[in-house]
Length: 376
RNA sequence: GGGAGUGUUCCCGAGUGGCCAAAGGGGGCAGACUGUAAAUCUGUUGUCAGUGACUUCGAUGGUCCGAAUCCAUCCGCUCCCA
Image (cartoon, rainbow, N blue to C red):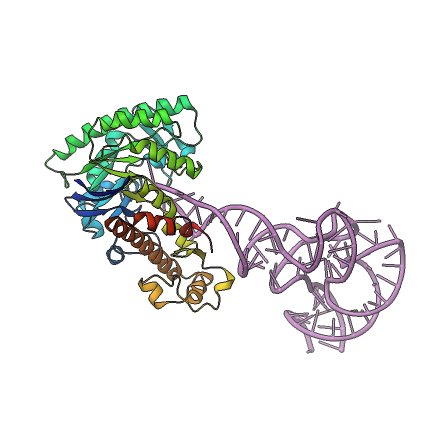
């Protein structure tokens, strides 16, 4: 479980022990929604870039290839040949992102498959059963991620329902972990804090869910369009009420700057599609800020994507070549850039952990907080 | 040699007298993307000056208040017949 190694004010250096291995925190979880990193990275590549946790999605895998197939194939670890921890997101966020088709009821959510349009029902029990079939290390609670901005009354009712759903998730997870046929009988369950940007709802909800004594706690419903100052405010607000002895996860966040702010406020783990999605669109993270490798000014640039990076892409290829690959629509362009960006994120987390070890986090933070999110 | 077409802004391609600096697509340039359906979406793309002005639709000349659009000649390309 979670062990706090040391604090640097509210920032935490820790380690999280699971049946699938130990995660050094703060950490970034690499997003492989459909059990694959978009852009053509293999689980071998993930090992090479020192990824600690892979994240997959319940909803997507339920549709294709189906959780039954993954289960028959021995679970996600065996299926993907990834031996380290895997976190599965519950599908709750998809209800939010596929908003036009959703119908939310007390029992769960009715919505349509984005693949063939067929009607799907998913509630807390369904989500737990699917995640148990997938046999991930960590299952996320089935929650409702309310869009921003939201009405107070709706947010309040939604939070209360998310709490009731969480109770049902916990009961179902306990039952599933006790079954003989379950692949991972030690599957962990994380609860998710909601409440939009209403301080009292956030705090009240956090207090309610901490009573359930779960394996970890996530902050959800952020980075959905609110100003970043508001996001940081909510993190600090909620953090005070999170158990000190449990791992904290800020869902779907974010930019390097967002992550530094999150770590500073006591968050342990993050995930985000930005490094991979942006890489596929030519936006490259470097230690001097963000570049768009597709820009004409790189046509004759013989230097690597990032002079300060020691990843294989930066050691072997020039900006000019990678820009050419994009212009020629070669998939190698995406692969190289996704590889670099994820390497950058994992490397960023390593440096953050080192700075916490050395008590130099504040210096590190000051040096990079604005720089890394700035476009060059 | 005879006949029929055709030439548009970087490319392809609409436009057949004023609402045309000229549709649409491609390409180019730039931007967006935060628990990933999407290799997607958005803006821009004659020049200069932010009203507007100027140059442009193969070339030259003409008709008209006004032409990418009509007429004449020339040049290039395509197809058919000999």
